[in-house]
Amino acid sequence: MDCCAAASLDGPVKELDEHAMTYDVICRWIRKILERWEKLFPELIPMISRTKMLLPSMHLHAHKELCQLVYALCYADGFADSYGEGVETPWHELNQAGIITREMTKGGRIDWLNSVFIDWNWLKFLGMRT
Image (cartoon, rainbow, N blue to C red; front, side, top):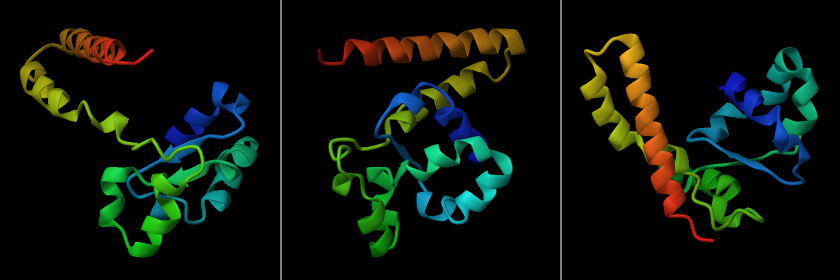
């Protein structure tokens, strides 16, 4: 997870005044994060230090009450309308795609999955409000 988070912070997000990260077990992951990142990604310490760490709304009730209060999206300034589960919404369709692509060649599987992702993103784009 550290590598994924570092990759997401090393880019245009550096220009933002405020940003947040949601993760199902954020309360566990951030323990000793600065110690780990001082060794792994020292140049990103300022970024991770000012990143708001939050729990996705659908995972909130699986946590202790203290975690629910500290890491809830609904209490975070600027993020209350978010629910933090956007990346998990296509799992149902992707699980079905896994069954279909199981016996394909590697190239065919990659092409087919790319098509599934393109379609998913297009449908999401069509549903956006302007």
